Amino acid sequence: MKKQLVHMKGTKDGLVLRLDDQCAYSDLVEELERKVSEGGIDGRVNVSLDLGYRYLLEPQKQELINIIEHPGKMVVSKVFSNVITVEENDAKNQGNQCDTYVGIVRSGQIIQAPGDIIVIGDVNPNGKIEAGGNIYVLGKLKGVAHAGIGGNRDAIIAASWFEPTHIYIADVIEVMTNEKPIVREHAEQLFAYINTKGIISYDRLQEVRKIRPLLNTKGGS
Amino acid sequence: MGEAIVITSGKGGVGKTTTTANLGTALALQGKKVCLVDTDIGLRNLDLVLGLDNRIIYDLVDVVEGRCKIHQALVKDKRVDDKLFLLPAAQTTDKNAVTPEQMKALIDELKREFEYVLIDCPAGIEQGYRNAVAGADSAIVVTTPEISAVRDADRIIGLLEQEEINPPKLIINRVRKDLIKQGDCMDINEITTHLSIDLLGIIVDNEDVIASSNKGEPIVMDPNNKASLGYRNIARRILGESVPLMTLDEGQKGVFRRLISIFSK
Image 1 (cartoon, each protein chain N blue to C red):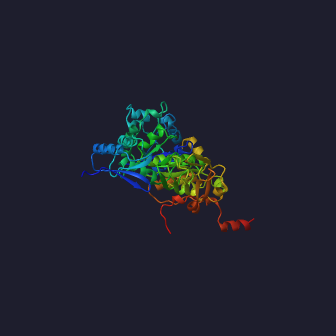
Image 2: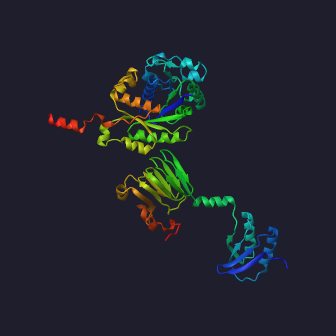
Image 3: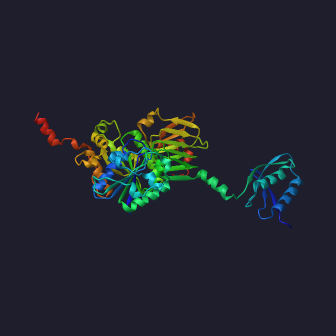
């Protein structure tokens, strides 16, 4: 008997169409068309597509989805694949990784990072840090810091010495001329975050765990 | 092969030219062969501070454009026997008359003959600054205890750190101990930790520096002046000696003297 190229399987998350990842793409298309036209399904159902270890280009993916959805009985809600390209992987990693900058960010210098950044050194006045994620300064933050540049309002800015001129988190700006009491009296080990009211607020570093528990990736007991 | 040191600050008026003239003279007094290069093309001053302005025949731009040989343009300072020379800037053109490559070739040629080539950098971070830094092996950043000068020094240090030269060193000029004591300006420690580069020395504020500059006679020539001592110490540090930093409180009386003065009232 010829090997089945398209498996239809019911799981607790709904119907899954598992496509063979070893055969030729044209064979797969052929069998999928036949299988879909067989019918046997009443009404509209959501299915997910599992490609296994086959890498498909975007137009190919669209072609398969069109075939499945053409009879009007199935709607593809999700496409799974075990493989992605190097570029896709890099782009995904960039957002998650933590860059390290060792040195002093001096007046006029801008240091950028796609994800989090740790600065080992001071950020001097008129120096600027821009990060897609969080900013951690192991030194004196006396310049400008912009965290969550892509719109991540959960980002925080933490520093051993917290004395910035401006703080930006996502689209919220805070000018530090009217210094907050906690910053004025206690510049050591502070961090800035957007609170539930949508304004920038400050607290001791020890409180990060309470305010942003999701930053913790390590577990610990 | 000598060493080329650029003296820069970012901000104008903090004493780059005065420092260049005095350090050069101090090094020459120590027996080193020194050439001072004024790169402030269009706004030349170094010749005035050294009192050599009326002896200029050719200038830096003449050399670069091949109108004369380097030796014809060098002006000798007769006060320091055959040790101190000046390559003056042109006054009739501007900074764009020279490219960094031409400048580097020029400095390299001078380095073959002189033990120290001090380059006086113009204020700013544009073409003139890039020309001045092009041929340098190391850099000295001059600042004063004013917040604006320190901010500009920070910027210039950031730019210098991107060049392929030795880490820049710091001179704090026009230090006034009365203001520091009152807390009205940044103290030495604050400035050095903020900029976090090595401190080469401090120069106390002194009226005689202005007077002697106006006379065309670098203050280092006067061995008894306090600012002069500061420059001499820095010159010795450049030569590799370890000289302790001048204390600001030198004029203050000791406990014993103070007791005597109480009793003698």
